[in-house]
Image 1 (cartoon, helix red, strand yellow):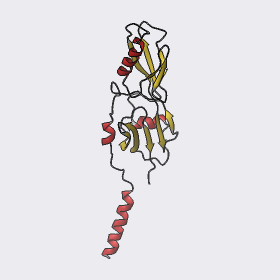
Image 2: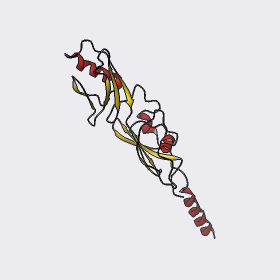
Image 3: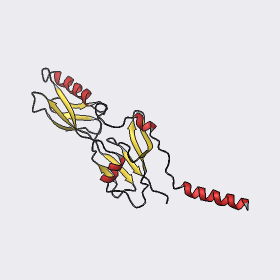
Image 4: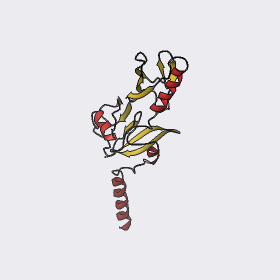
Length: 190
């Protein structure tokens, strides 16, 4: 009789164990930076930049960062800015302009549009979407037209580019999303 009770207890605990959500694993993602993307945001392919060269209206424009992390500007050609902050990109452009094109250039670089984020899995419409500053995983799901019928609604797997390559972690729905992140909404078991 005791064996039967033990077997019944073990079976029921295994069945209910599938209902639990996994532990959140955000330590490695937190090391890449969360929250507001302000000054430590590094430029990459897919970003659109507003470059303003004071006193030179013909050079001031919106430029797209290509796959190699460069922008193409009149007079100076391609400028490698991938991996730099907006302030560092402004100094790089100033340096190229000062080399024989503009006397004492003053440049400002702003992000006009951040690179998109991606959402996959159990959402109504998976795909690529424009990034909105301050968004969370829950906001990203809403942008993708909501959860699918079998979606796990209390966590997702988020992958982002870190200093040493891609970093993934299981995150709550309130976790902040950054440009270029990939969100995977998993299927629930029951």
